[in-house]
Image (cartoon, rainbow, N blue to C red; front, side, top):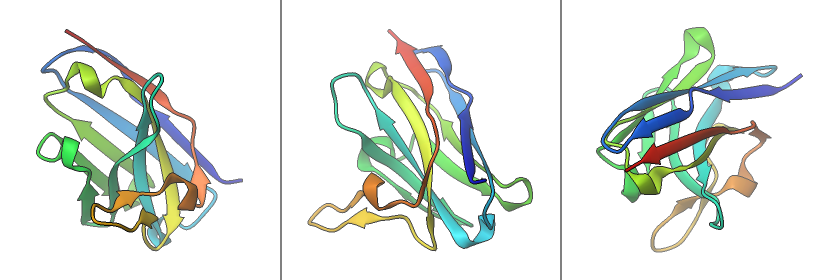
Length: 129
């Protein structure tokens, strides 16, 4: 059974840090790329980061603040979030796609949630001012 389980969310003050984890099972971890998405109330889901091995991709709005890490030995990916801002408040979830993260082409390519293969439930991140 394929499972992606995100955890590590919580309440943090602006400027603080959190690390999210996404534990994967039921498929060959090394063959997949992992993406983090987030959805705030009333807003569309947006891609945050993608990681496969040592390769990473970040949305512009998190570059320099978030770091995606893959631990193949633990079949777990992490999203280390620093300098969190109120606008980072959202439900964060992870998804997996074989080989590469799905990307919607365009002048500013964006991670494509619908193009991923496996999906996990989210974890709430709330940043207070």
